[in-house]
Image (cartoon, rainbow, N blue to C red; front, top):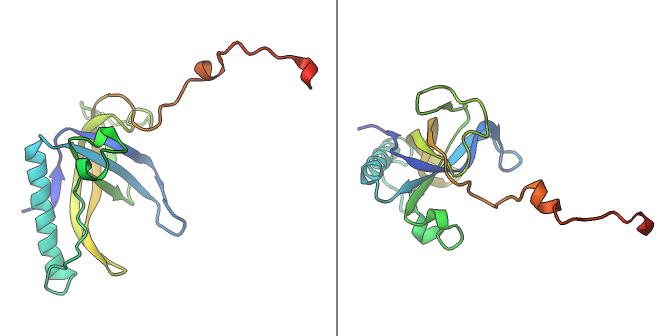
Length: 181
């Protein structure tokens, strides 16, 4: 068994893979991405569940004193249960967050390195190389997800707040009436 998984086609969300950042002051800067995994991709879900189970076994042996904790935090979450009300792109998806202190390799479908941060964005689709590991930090015990590499496969509608163009915002025919100043 292995704790490393190469996913099938997933949708990227909260893409932060070109520049590391700390989400709270005092935290280490990390690269990160949320992977939206279609529930019908049973092969990827099965590989992820097996890797999580392998990481749990490692944790029992090395981090949690020989037994599985009752309040274990697991990384694979159900988008229909947790997020579909506020974010429709989570409908019919599982999701997990992967991160790394090292910059992931980022390639296109032909394995050419992608350097332009606008090329891989929240909403695009691809595959990810991830690994699962046990943790025991400040009393929190669980399985985390490391981000190794990203392969972009296709474009799609951007996720997140739709941003209007400058032309749309300012195209109302405003006329400056200098007498007001």
